[in-house]
Image (cartoon, rainbow, N blue to C red):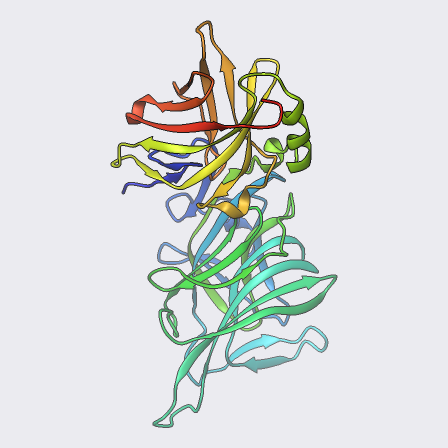
Length: 366
């Protein structure tokens, strides 16, 4: 399947150059998850059964990177999810056996300990069991537990595109450095919630949560992550300081450069926006500083971030080009840039047989 990675100006056909993927399943022995709460291997799956009144967690520290984006996915089935049936568990206070219907399981992330974590929990209900108008549905509860106190961040009711019985559902938690998105579905992922205030906690754990009376089967667990270079691309520049600096500059290359046109090979490239950047001199050439104009992934780019570099070469007005695309992926494979008459900057992508041109905007210092 062809996958397009977004560039600042366009989408480039590249494989992921940074990042890793950990895949836990029966062929891989489920790794450390097989040792953290599982009771059995059964039909190529890992089974967890909780006969107590406190949550059962199976977690692993997969990711140790403060500057990371990730997609954490679990394919999980609730085996104690029959209509009208209750399941036993033991109360921790008096050790007595009790019953519960509508058992609950799901995925946990940002797990520090049993008193501090985030979780996506699923359980099913009937509106009026055995009635002709009865409807079965799922409640998805996204919760935060802090110092043992559980609070609901969002509750969603679903009755389509999810398995409401003992079949598998997929849960995905995706964090892009700013937003945390929650997806769920039986055959494909459906977005059910986004949060802007949940940050990744370094050295925290990810895994499975199974609540009282529930038995859950896990077919696979997948963690994919990329190093987020947002902090690496931060500079001391801002709109005011760039404006002040350029107004005093006499360098013929320094200044604002705006989108002019493009010549793209559309089987590999797609225009993603019309951008304005600033070139400011550094020790090896020029830094390319993002100003504005992002259309694709515009939320992750702020004025003053480093967009790339022009590195000096032993040729007049020709530079080695280093570029960070809209997903902040580093592109530096045989790229180069040329400047004509100090007015036209051309970014060359020879492998894609494409180029982008920018023109210089007059400033007070020029």
